[in-house]
Image (cartoon, rainbow, N blue to C red; front, side):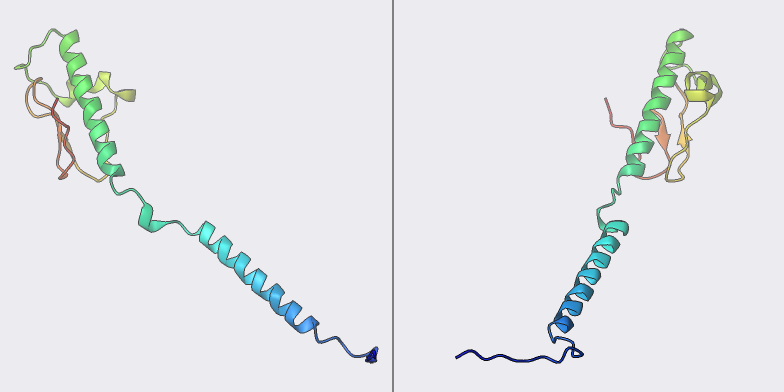
Length: 125
């Protein structure tokens, strides 16, 4: 025995309701995925980047100081200033600490340059 159900041609099938709900769900998932891709990941940002950049600047200052001392036949006890090493720096400019610290060459060629910010220290050789 076969049952046949006649449908009114003006009547919409009930299967269209879940289909539209599935479309809304997919659209919501796509919107969420786009939002997650666009939003920056704040928790995984490197916090050591300014320290590394500052230490790199200190290395450049130290290298410029050493090159100035070699070129001018200076010893470790000779005084040195920022004006002395400017020609040995990129574009003749003193670098700036990314965290807002200030650089100090101290007094002599043998002294390592320092930064006023904590943890911004050149490693000892």
